[in-house]
Length: 126
Image (tube, rainbow, N blue to C red; front, side):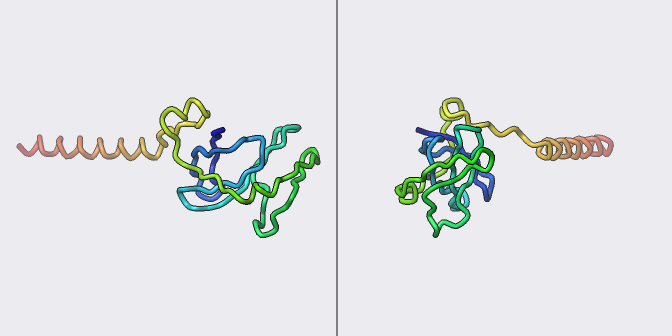
């Protein structure tokens, strides 16, 4: 099952093969950061559950409802790769599309204004 995730280090949003309701180890293909993911179905919170990968905990306790979720050992044997989504995965998996940031819009407005001023000055000089 493909799910979207966001790298906790670089913020890259991509798609990885894992079940959102099962613990997973995910590796970002953008920055190579490895992070964990777990979801508590009872209270609907989730996120990174391992602070030290060397410890390989066999369970996780939800900080909100204290539900304990077991983590199978094979969770640690396979890193799911977080990759850039394919065009059809935006809709299928629900990957949010990036909107142009306001800084990009401001940059283009400044460029257009500079060009207009140059053209105006050139027109006056002819």
